[in-house]
Picture 1 (tube, rainbow, N blue to C red):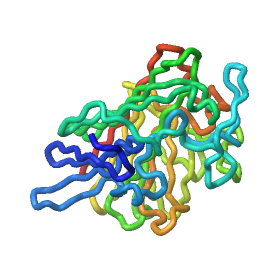
Picture 2 (picture 1 turned 45 degrees about the vertical axis):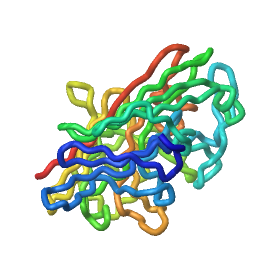
Picture 3 (picture 1 turned 90 degrees about the vertical axis):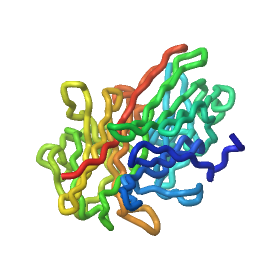
Picture 4 (picture 1 turned 60 degrees about the vertical axis):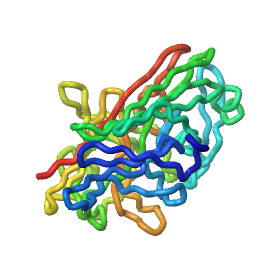
Length: 316
């Protein structure tokens, strides 16, 4: 493959499904359906070309999703300082890999795997003195779009890791206000004015943030990290977006490795606010580097950590 740039893109297809992905950040840029007449139905609020991205569309969030307060954390007795790259305040946000070129390890018509290596020698100065190899796979099939990840510790010491993904979804409405959402979280993190957790976990019961059953989004301003997810007998948690009038539903199913989901209405996105709803599967909650019991994975040398989520469109 030629040199990877922010504009490098690959197309996947399976029956009436299409996906556009890029080795730049291992990003998911579009997911759509095409009917017999060639009409496209977007499942994601997507983009094309590196300059087209807004609000973190389709980003991979590794080795930490969400914010790390002030970029500071302690792990195994080490006090470490990450780069503070958050436009909302002096925090670190969403890891390192979303703005790096990945390698195309394997590519087929309906499936692609990207990989990247993070070396302690390179990232120690940025507050992450750990070595990882990361794989991300996108696959289209009869059950929809599946995104899976694996992280392996290839270093000499244990490493703190988390994974997250940042897709935005649309059910064909001009504003997300017109849609309804179902969120499996029974609790959410209290955030301060800098959008980092205070440490408190609040029950959704009896609050405006209880969306365990479908409710209209309306003018609700989501920027919430939901935890303590309701699961089925297989350990799967499902968030769903629907437009009853249009007869469309999107289900985002997350396996047992995902312990949190961030929901964001995109109010701060310049030019196109509230165009879609971000439903972000995360293996740990925001600021888990400072709250390890919120799902942070301690990965020992030679150990791997894997998970997957799936997106399925259906009619009602």
